[in-house]
Image (cartoon, rainbow, N blue to C red; front, side):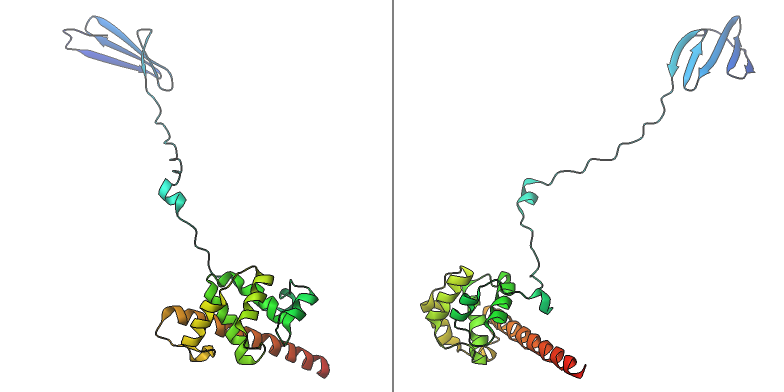
Length: 211
């Protein structure tokens, strides 16, 4: 509502009802509801309550992010006796060519297998057992056993060339080549776990004897 040529205004406040006299033109301003304004009986506008901003939706991963593979940490192999179970039959254990406690050796090999991502890594198992005298120096027989029990096909000629270059004693392998250092670490870890397993068994027997 336009008010023209008026110089004097008078306001009378009656709560929600405000009477305004502008010269000869009376103006009645009413606040009938929160946010609703009535001018001379005509609704002229409403103040809008501030909108609560919605939480932004989580953005979906981009195509590039979705394609990035998740890198899993190396498997933690339990050392408790109860958790070290051999998955192979007695007949398979007897035929595997491992002279000492094949059940324990094969169980530990099975548990560690996820870390042996390259075929040449299987030399780590082989050389650790060679150093113990628990297998014969027969790489072709070892490769057959690995294929039969672990479904990993090894090339005995390629592995034999590696052994001729680096030797069958893993403790003497060079520390200058990172690839060989990795295989050396795998062999040492396997060897150490075998030692710790049988040491725990020995201590358990002594505890039983002592009562």
